[in-house]
Structures are given as C-alpha cells and as structure tokens.
Image (cartoon, rainbow, N blue to C red; front, side, top):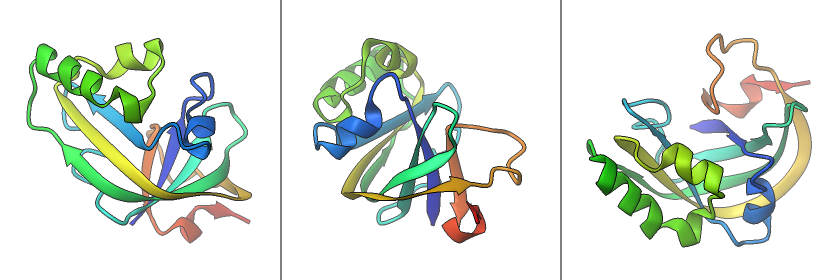
Length: 142
C-alpha cells in the first residue's frame, strides 16, 4: 500500500527526515482516524510539505508501526515524550498529538529524495494529512 503523507513545513519535518535527525512519524486523534489501522510494515510513504505546492519530494518505507489502544491523556503524553528523540516534534506538534486517545507511531526506513511530482487529490473529498492511495501511480498527476 502506498500513502501520501503531509509533513509540517514550519516544523521542518522533511528536512529532519532528510538529515536523519527524525525517523518516526506520529498521527493521533480522539477516535480511530487514518492512518490508524491502515498503515503497515513495508508500506511506501510519499512525503509532501504542507506549504501548498502539492509536490511529493521524498519517499520512505515503513519499518515498524505501533497502533495504541485507547490511552488516557497521561499515557498519551508519556508515550509521545518517550519517543521524542525519534519524532523531533516542535512544541506545536507536541501539543497537537500528546494527549490524544489513539496514536499511530510510524518508524521509517530507507528515506530518499525523489524527483518531485504533483499529486492529484481530486479523488479525495475529505482532505487530510494522510492519504492511503493504494498505488501512487493512481494519484501521480502527469
């Protein structure tokens, strides 16, 4: 399965993945929201920064995934803090995810910059920061 993953431009997530300082992604919500339960080991992730250009600029594979059971606020904060060395969350992102009931922690491997290409988001009515696209060729805007 291929996924299009939006990264926070202001937090320099793409840059931190590229230079190896960051090797884990996080998504969380009060309910089970994508990618919870939909991302697995060896899935391909295509990265776009949330700055409006719509270009996939890098790729990585999922190394490991942890989908939590329902967490208390304290358990959630503790888990985010325990993985901060891999997540490299800025204060805004830390506040956004710490405390959520359901977390998906996605450890990535084989990060590589790719020839940028535009993503066709027309088939996704509900825009989110994580799009399971099945096959990247279906959304590669040529």
